[in-house]
Image 1 (cartoon, helix red, strand yellow):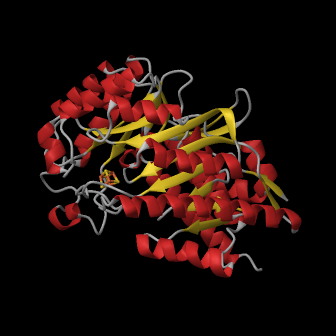
Image 2 (cartoon, rainbow, N blue to C red):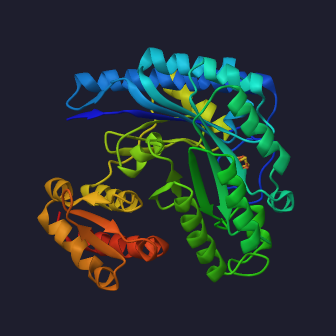
Length: 408
Ligand code: SF4
């Protein structure tokens, strides 16, 4: 079976400091030699990944090395690498996979780490979309989170993006921060809209284990906003951004017409993708492969792959697991999932089971099947999206229970 891969994610783990809520794979390292070695290792991993795809093509199944339509530098703080370093990675991707002329090439950046000149450099190597981690427009809230920037630096970064001639940029905001009030939130939304980003992503703070926040705060306790307040923030964001002309196209994402994030759509459609770099996950040939989350271990992994030919691997995702992933991801999108295609791929019995499990939610009006232009399964906003965790947990439990009771 041939699979078509259209996206690549490259993890750049460097950060100036660790934000208090962060549980991503990062390294607070500033030495240029380590960054250079990291870039070399990522380029090496890209070459090895392409080689493995080519080897597969001679075996029973193959990965089709078509030109990539999306390239995403995430982190970490990718803007801590200079244009020359990122350019080397883009060159490696071009050589081994090819990048389409009109590809979306995104770079995550933090305020305080970009200048007009660095952004001009990123544009020159092909970056055409910047995702800026603004998070809040109150310097005291940014300080509570241990963010390494202030509000003025958000404005400076947007001005630099504009001066560099990169018209497509996205802002990230976080709701549910400690000490955040509805007034703060309304003001952050208003200031974001004023900056006219093409896209806005909004995340509700989750206090994750192994973070500084986890030691300080209990979910639901002050100074975290109450659950009712975070629901109000969600509804306010949706109302204000839709009124400002944004489409609420995914649970956490808003875009002006024509500016949905194509890279993230690939995830939500549960399509395969390359993933390279420390802590990155790839999804190829039904295998979700996680890379080590520590720099030294990641370097070792690529060395062993290069020297001994031992590539990282993972068990194949079963058909039921694939269906669960498709539901969990696809139900995040306003457009939902095409029921006929689901039936064709996973069989009528499985989809019957999905619909049975969703019956209570159909009755509450939180989920529905739309008919135009074809039957699609969607969660109905706002309740379907507000309770999406509960709905997808139910689906997960129902489908895994069935899977376990099916004789193999
Ligand atoms: S900048 Fe982003 S990746 Fe880096 S520590 Fe903060 S939240 Fe984590």
